[in-house]
Image (tube, rainbow, N blue to C red):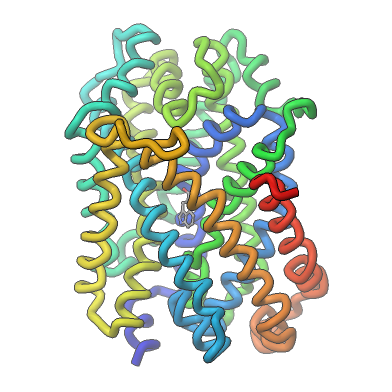
Length: 449
Ligand code: TRP
């Protein structure tokens, strides 16, 4: 019965686009540049690329393998594949992470709506760079607006998830993501022709080894997990909708390449402007929102492009929030045996409460701090840098050591129909390289070694 319920919701062919839609989002365009800016620039990029290859791809492929094998939500998947064992806890931690990620991610998605609104109302034109930079802080510390936009975005996400993804979002994503790509290229061209662009590009691409620190490496790992949507079961869930004829290895590779490319292109669009306009690269979560409007002012047709850009960014965020909400909804509906609708309502109510606290991190709840972090910072840091890597660690350990090599082989070769010649490499990566890398980075980041 469960399988039937899932089938009627998931379209199998659009899933590759959906997986890329999940991966590509605010993580690439908003989070990547700001985290890179705070962590030494080029050296961060280098470490990031190494970790994505050594850890990111193996975890992603492991998630697809688990999901397609088990045909369930993350928690249910582990229960199917390892009945009576504590592995389902990994799924549960993933569900917990989904709540937290959705709460703060949707808040940032709400910011993109505010910026879309400003773009439409010509809110940037005629303003000095100083004013534009301030706009962000003023907006974010206001009482109602960030919460309002968060709620609107939450309802949009819920509305799509409850009415099914098949006919809507997957189709649009396939058309709109290339659009986003082209737009970023346009911004890139403008950015690299700004006076003083060289300094920004140097910051992004030149690895200064003296800036390497344990925290940089942990942040790069966290960013990799976050950007690829791995470590909490999003891609287990999507994997369970992938047709048995699809090549999982290809899917994982393509999604990873596309995701990484978009992140680098976002960096190329942003850092030249950061330096050209004297913005601090370590300016944190507001970096993109303070820089991009400045570039738009410098482009012919900037009014038009700014609307298009923030619209596409909102859509990219939406295809990601949907994938996170889908994890919670699949979990609730399959495990509690309730309807999709009830499951969605339940999810929205819980995430809604968390999200309002996060949205008010600079307003109503600005006095609340733990370790100098507000709600937003706590959610962001705990999920990306702790919950996702821990989840990813157990996911690769499970596939490498407990799922059975024959099962893995069978799933990756589609029951022997295709040759998965990369299999020995994959097994080596999931057994040794990825778990060891995660463990080392993690213990190092926490100061244990
Ligand atoms: N990867 C998305 C982005 O970069 C965000 C996201 C979607 C995500 N699903 C996730 C992050 C699961 C972590 C885990 O915007």
